[in-house]
Image 1 (cartoon, rainbow, N blue to C red):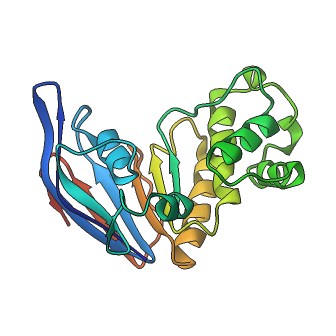
Image 2: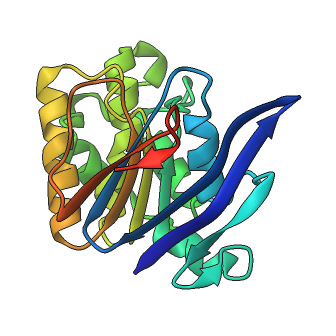
Length: 211
């Protein structure tokens, strides 16, 4: 499995956020995207997922432009944005079921409960999310990862935000196992944490260089 981007640029209004970004990732690779606030980290992740169009450049999955293999790419991808995107009036398990359905990978209730148990949320699975903390909201969103272990590409925008130390370590372990299985990970974080990977790289949008 390979994800490749060529000469990506992004413009918002009259401002160019980044230019000539290139990358190539394969099974077991992790890429951390860094840069100052407003530099375009979230925009780059959305472009890599096909949720936004670049001003210039292309993104390729398995050698094909992602616009030409939308269905195949969607099946291979899990994208979690910076916001938890949790419906406050739905229970935790209802949120997990809804997220899986929207992603085109519906699951049964018992599977959703099992994912929440793995995320340490079995005691609150049936509570409305308006009663949960911000950290619990984040863990409800991240529970989707336990339903998508076979997805080839995880793109995660600030996955560690709002998590306590134990939950952060649990997520690192989840990402470690995913990379060992041959997944590809692209992520942003302001925290000093990093999963293990066969090849771990950083793309600094301030410098616009990959190292």
